Length: 308
Image (cartoon, rainbow, N blue to C red; front, side):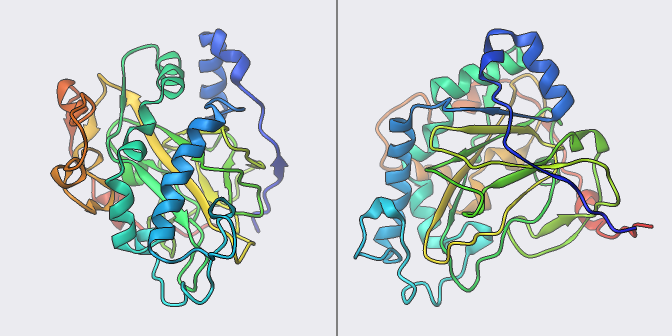
């Protein structure tokens, strides 16, 4: 039987439920995701956007005939660009961004920390492994395939990803879509695929809808690590799509050690922190007693499943 899922356009705004933690947690448990309209002030997201676009500009990939904030790409300059690990840029550019203090500390934004304190009802640990997608249209570009974050994170299943569109991201620019309620399906098998993570979930006939949205700067989508999600096709061949993945969990729950190192091991923490002023947010996770859990490689090598 062919799997033909329904598609819903537009999320319900969960902002009113921030004043009702019980209702918020009930919706999170049922749907597997929450959407918040304009949760983070646009000016704060714009500063992050400026840092990300500044990195791309410094590597010569923006079309200088346009204002930088337009995020237009110089097609000739990106001909030989190889998207490193699905980040959208090469390794050198990604390392430059990871060293930026504003990028690393954005997940500690008061609005985000407050959200997860309400959601978990206890002390929160933001994962230090911060992820950026600076999706520069180039020949090596591939959309992120359908997957569950748990395959790549492990640790506690009560990790929630915070997907931040760094600018307006309409569906045609390759925004994120989620499979409503799919966190209840358990951990599914995977197969090799192109795009970020290099793994795609094997999904048989499931009567659940995909939900899409036209995101605006300041919006936040957050979802459980077992929820299926993917990026939509990027239909603008001349425009960069910017987004970040920040992850949060109850501080008392266990974590897998790779979540405590920089994404893709692009640098060591000492290198990332080298030019920072003194701040308590350096190595902040070392002040917590979060227990470590082992990595289960079998979640990666069990890559085949036939759907009847």
